[in-house]
Image (tube, rainbow, N blue to C red; front, side, top):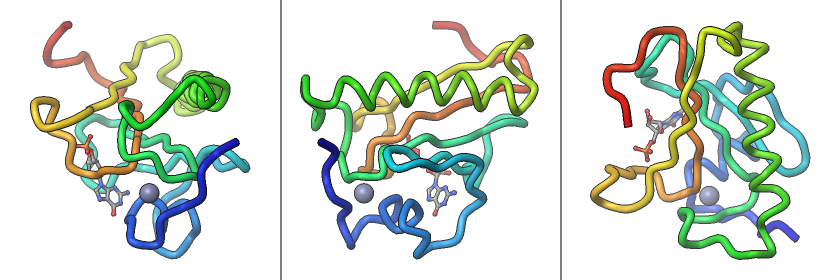
Length: 118
Ligand code: 5GP
Ligand code: ZN
């Protein structure tokens, strides 16, 4: 069971359609929209529609929709034409990772060679 939204959260508002964004995919569990300041030719954010502040906020009960998020990332990558050229899915959690928005989001990045390898 996914959580409800938080009316003070910017990404909850995007999922609810209260703040405009360029949505590329949406269903009852997840929303995918273009990043406002893209770091790559393709930069899409994929979020759960319910409010989770970060990965630390998720538990076993969330495993199913979390898996769907990754499948959604792969499908959007194909749709955006980067399925074969390559892409990266990144989740920032906490200060050392530079997380700035505290609604869990998965960055889908591609369309150019990545600046660094992990
Ligand atoms: P973080 O650093 O927390 O992992 O990433 C937050 C991301 O959200 C950044 O890449 C930033 O550009 C993006 N972002 C922040 N506010 C908005 C917004 O209002 N709309 C959209 N589309 N992206 C946003
Ligand atoms: Zn939220």
